[in-house]
Length: 315
Image (tube, rainbow, N blue to C red; front, top):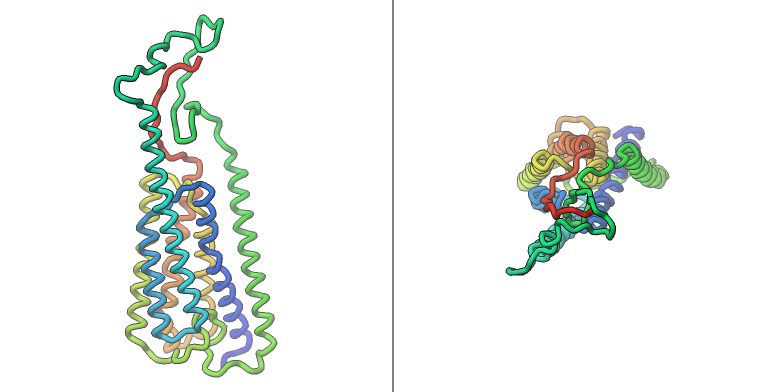
């Protein structure tokens, strides 16, 4: 019989992981909605993540996990599709707006550029010696080429504070659930593998299911590949503007607590062997998510290069 301490710890880490996964996509979805853009996300990340969740759902169903776990997997896939929908919707809208802006800037054939016709004329009455100031045309309008840098220290503290609040809320949810579970510690459910919120109370968790194992290992490959796409995109663009640090932080917390919920319960070879693909799913992406978080902080002082057009003197 598993010691009560191990059972409690396993249940705590399991509920912590479960509560984190419920909100893991929310920060990025909200950021996309506010910015009306999802350009910061790699399409490879979204597609591979979706296929990974699909394979994970199939593998978990074949292995015989809790029904609530299957519902959570379906919830993941729905959020994947919502994020993909945002990506295509905002990219399509951005393409249309970009084409309209370029058309308005260039004008119709035969039009005379008013700036070129009056480039020697002062814009303000009585100004005989105008000072030339170059500006660039961006999506947001006119802005000087040399702008005051934003306060990144304040932004950093705000980000860290948000992450701390999210972590505390998830831990409170986990402790709340453990409190309810502790009321029935004297009567543990039969054939339960402990407090793992994802793998607990399996119908047949002690048997090796080849198809379930294969699907889960394929999911691991998709999850790892998805992060590789995002890391490559961040490195190529030299910016992570619009990418939610909170989402990848929650991924790290969720995956690490998930792996802990399995390992704390038991380290018997047969138990580890059966749960190995699920452990690999939890631990495999932690390092890559940490790299993406590091990129977000490293590139935070950099602004992505956008095409600009010099439009002449403003006076």
